[in-house]
Image (cartoon, rainbow, N blue to C red; front, side, top):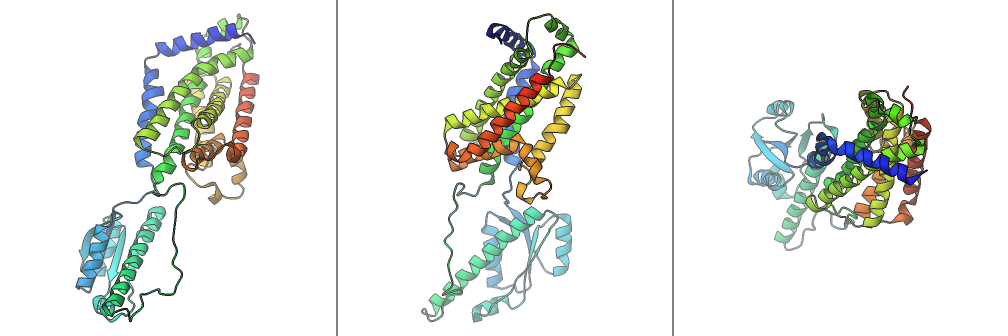
Length: 380
């Protein structure tokens, strides 16, 4: 391979990229805009859950419980209903995700120290949100019950033990994401997803554009080798990818305040390997496509969508059927998601991430060799 020939091809590609005014919006503005949209929208946190109460007791104790829900940032009390018959309408229209029934005699039972049962009904059409909401409600009610028991014990001079006395009290500590913010987990994944989509689609147009414009025949009379053609196509888009990396990582770190606990050098090194994999994938698609439209459709439907679905970004790999899970080992996004989230949130190094780094490097080398083997300077 001759560096001077490759350098001139790289310069040619950069000139073509500069002449396309729409490219700035595609490779610079679009990733940042999508990062903002997805980072704010793609969250599993549940806030302001609409909850309706059926208060059959109408006592100070029932009003205190309702006020406790209303003060919580996790809930918003939408209505206090008079009858359980009204619950169905609220759940069906989506005006409430939860409905809590307070039975008659609730306040008197609490004053007497007798156990009391509350009925909680949830809209299960969104199973994830319903499960999280029920967990929040159960925890709030349990905490409130412990406080009431402690008040009774204090009022009786300590003669009554609080509910749960003598039991094991858990002291919970959350590592790596102590705020339990799903955004800290989702944003590194969004960064990996954006780099995959942008760089793969850009590079998939490389050789196909030469075919459509007829310049592939002009390259045919040059002394360029296949490896030089591929590298000459790869490097300009690699430069664009690095610019995107700096932009989206800066937004993730300084705007969304996602903690970066690991090595920045290791992060960029792994990202470069990932870019080689995504650019190589795009160039491989380019070599098997005849038009730019065909290249984009092939990249999207045969590679990008399956990779997103099977990488663990949308669905946990552990929850997939056993027959599907081995296929996920063929997905480079799977390895980069683990690398990115581990460097950001856990601060681990290559001594922990070497299996993912090795798999990602092998994938990048394989797809690049396939692209070189498939490429040809002759139009078909």
